[in-house]
Image 1: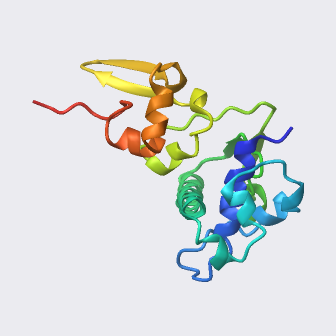
Image 2: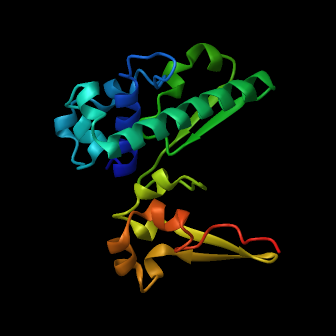
Length: 193
């Protein structure tokens, strides 16, 4: 079974690769080919629905814009980090939760002298730390996947978002990213006195 996350992440990269301006285009020109026919993907997500639209039509949806921009930044960051690591002497690359990852294909020249391991077994688990309200918004329907870390003095405290008894009321008030950004759900630095 293909994970939902790998599908909508690849869809965001695929739509971003259609960007007409090469200076802001997602470099993952293979994402759409790896996904195949979008109508066969059993995932209802704005970025997946956007695959059947023109780029300009797709980018009228703010959720698609957020996903596409985030995936472009993420893809470029990983590409740059990979290039720096190999230039610095890395001899092995491990791609965790490979899903629809295209690095082994897109970066063949860069990777020709290193060993690449792609690890992906259902169910996949990816751990991401972020300060991005846009990324957090992608987990609105899956708050059990979000763990909020709060530093108190020299200690770190962890709380699964879905364990909050007030979560249903909070979700009625706004997007997860907005709730985090405003400090309502925690995970923001304490003010220094």
